[in-house]
Length: 432
Image (cartoon, rainbow, N blue to C red):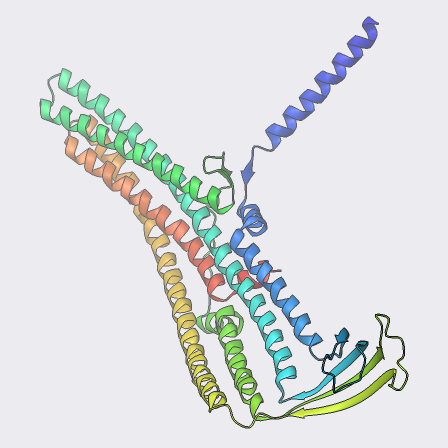
């Protein structure tokens, strides 16, 4: 019995160790791609766009069925109390089939409209996905920037604490006046306040990314660093060509023009006749089961072709056609606006990318100079060859240089993402 208990305890300890090791291997760190997958899977805007596509596909199937024949059944009772007629009460039941043959192109055009509506809904999904993935990039790099700036604020506090200790020692030795020592105290307090502010920015950046991923706003979040970059040579001609070719906004505008043209056809349909073919079979009798009546036909079979043409509607159709033509003009103008908006968006992304690339090179040099400047001033201060103000100014310059570098670093990576967004790459990749 003791041996069995010992074996059970051994296996419990073994599996607990394995489970703990697995947890340590996976600390919950999310990569950029994992964040994108979570957002794509859970985002309500994307779900609504997909539901709208399903709705339009169902409407397309419905419009196609307007081309098919319909079958109906009817049952009637006829009572004529007038004494002039000797016809008995009649019960009639029957079936009727109708096939629309022509409705002024409205049937076929309605199907085309529904097909265009489905295609438009797919483009809306592309647009939502394109913007959504870029939002993930924006918040992901905003969090990385906040984490780096928080760490820099913490390092700044350590440098200010070190300087404060030097200043206190020099003041105790009578080498500097009290106001120099107090200046170091004030700067340290400001550095600690800056650290508190940086921590708040980091917490807010985590909350924003969590909300985008449909997670609790205060959920634990750890993301992978992305400080490696390669300056890419991107051609403006390629960017604008891809943007005009792939951006869903332009394609939606083109679809809107086609829809407006088809709408004119639909509005002109009442000018033309409608033709319907129908066939019916009726059973007639004098009781509830339509039993035959002597002297009356017990069955009635008909096949009819019916043509209907509205001749006068007080020019209502003309007014609707005129409104549809104006809507077509509006849709054509919208295409031009969409092209201009996409072109401007792409141009802005391209210029920001060029700017960010230049800023990285400048900021990297600035960091080297700022670090060396701080080292020299700190050494000179300790040798009493520089003032406290010199050290504090050098510390401020170093912090600013680090801030500028992280702005440029993550700004460049975000600018690369903006180029992909401008080209519509995210929509095509993640909308499926």
